[in-house]
Length: 314
Image (cartoon, rainbow, N blue to C red; front, side):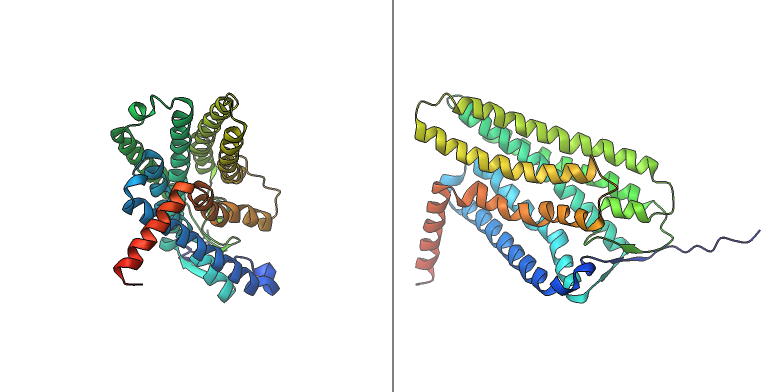
């Protein structure tokens, strides 16, 4: 009996957007600009909230943690995407690929928990304004933040562990711009049934539950807003909540389509475009929607800038 001619894959080749060679330079400039704006916007939020006492409220505390998360979340995938666009294909070691997969799943799940917590916080603030200080006290905020982080850390562990235990015998080309779950399972030469079922159940538990909790909070908020007698007050609140809900829907919708209800008939390029929304677009929109449109936050930014300029004599 002849031995099987198999070899273990030690590195992968990320193909990225190689079918768009004539657009590589333009895509690089666009993604680099978005990445710089995302990092700048989220760092501004973290800095301003930490330095302005008026923003030390539950809403801004959650926002600060979300912005801190977004810096690492977008840095998990975008720098490698930029390098891929410059080199027309990027090699990544097996261990680095598994590390990227872990941090991506961990940070994605944590963001879902934070979005649900922030929606619940807004629900209490709008629907129970008199009881809000007693319901959303500082100790509860700290617990919710801790639970979100630790649950995300635990969520990322199982999928990356199961993927790392699969056999990869070749080919080693990942038709994506980062180490994602579906393309890695497609490359495996061992059975992925248990892994697929586990990831499906985990995706439902995290994405769908968090999405419906978030959606339910906004439904109650909208019904409460309809009872506001002031037309301008209703319009302002609807505009804010509508913007929040739009970003949340983009994030959850694209994530659910990839991990809860994947379509195997979609072209890999379509999957990449869908992935761009939750890895590149929403980390940019979150600071704009949640803070930079907020009057109190903009005033806090001016105050911090004036203070810094005074320190440095500008």
